[in-house]
Amino acid sequence: MTTIRFANRMDALLKGTDTLLIVGSQAVLKQGERFDQLPEELMRLAVDLATDLAPGDMGTAAGTLTGTSPRKLALGMLPDTLSRHNSPTRSLGIQQVVAQSQTGKKGNAAILLYLDDASHYPAAAAAIARCLPLFSEKSSASPKATLKILALGPDDEPIPATKAVQTRVEMVRLVASWVDMPPSDCNPAYIQKAVWALLKGIPGVTKTAIVGDKLLTAGLGGIHGVGRTAPEAPRLLVLNYKPTGRAKGSLVALVGKGVTYDTGGLSLKVGGSMVNMKTDMGGAAAVFGAFLELVQTGCKRPVSALLCLAENSIGPNSYRPDDILKMHSGKSVEINNTDAEGRLLLGDGVSYAARKLKAAVILDAATLTGAQLVATGKAHAAVVTNEESLETGLIQAGKLSGELVHPLPFAPELYKKEFASQVADMKNSVADRMNAQSSCAAQFVYNHLDGQKVAWGHVDLAGPASIKGRATGFGVGLLAETVRAL
Image 1 (cartoon, rainbow, N blue to C red):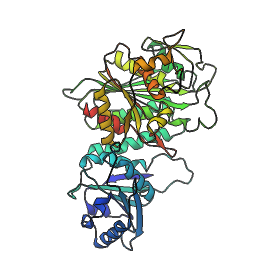
Image 2: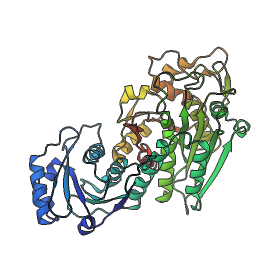
Image 3: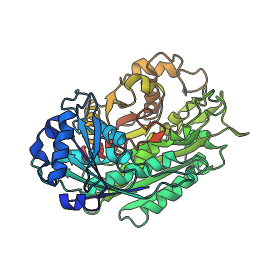
Image 4: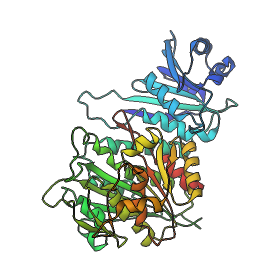
């Protein structure tokens, strides 16, 4: 496991370092004078590497042995130009060159970042953190490693690693480790225990758990139905934060889908499509990470986090196709697909946030649809909102955090009909799978806000929640930056 630390000076960065990776745009690295702070031998080698390197579309890394200390020097060169749907932080490129160079995997390593703006530091640091996941159960344990990070601005002065930078790194790695864990270990009870421990003693935070059959008493039939047959009872964790002093703004609620494993239920997933369904809790993980980041960095706005936790298992008490569940909204839902379970959790969660907590703004996050990957890809999450200003805010927060999003249509008049039922208020899965599946899934969630005056934003992060079999912690920065900007 790699420990990540931050340096505030060049000499502190280089002290005891075996490997140094320098990351910057092509324009920066081609300017040899930007390496003036390095020892002369390293400066010469860096200039030579930069001369022969081309960044390509996303960034390229190359290295050499130095014959001095540090023993190895590498350059990660990023392209100067970015499309308008990319992030100016170049976080995806940083992630690529760090992974390509394998920096931080062993020994004592360091990364020197040349950033265009100090505001890019949290996104850049998080991109590095994603290359160094915490969880592993390999029998041959990886040797302990240390990585130090120093960021320099356009004036070549160090950019301070603020509490926001350090917390972003911690939260991204923490929640990604939960998603990476096997579902036999990371179940609803485990998450509750971990959350309770992490929140212990934090001023202004209160927490409540509604567990098992108590969900029915509270009207949360969706969460209960999905998880009622699993070994660990389903639950709703409600976390509330009130800042010290006078709060600024109305309550924002973050709602996360936390299906710790998704078999598909009685609508069983087939072939290899069940593999890696431990990642179906990525939304709840992101919500908790964002909540804890906001709390630890002194957010002035009241914030709540609702973690909707269940395992979609098969057993004698499984919810069935043709069952009708009563949701917190008071709406009845005829089940026509038990593998459309996440929206049942979110429907209860957003309704509870609006009706019980009286939130003015609700943001939900979920690995909700495979169709999201078709619609917006593996790098961009999809967003659906009922307010254009909130859509704009999510896009801007995505660019700032390096966790990109792209909007999908919000059009209830076009999508509500997909859930028509003869015996209930709605079905839980669409009639026509070729009619904007991801927007329709979001529409189902929004149906449970009927009659509530609330600004609502939905983030489907099925694609960017994991890459090459490892969780990314995607959503932590996106949600935290969105709340800060409200």
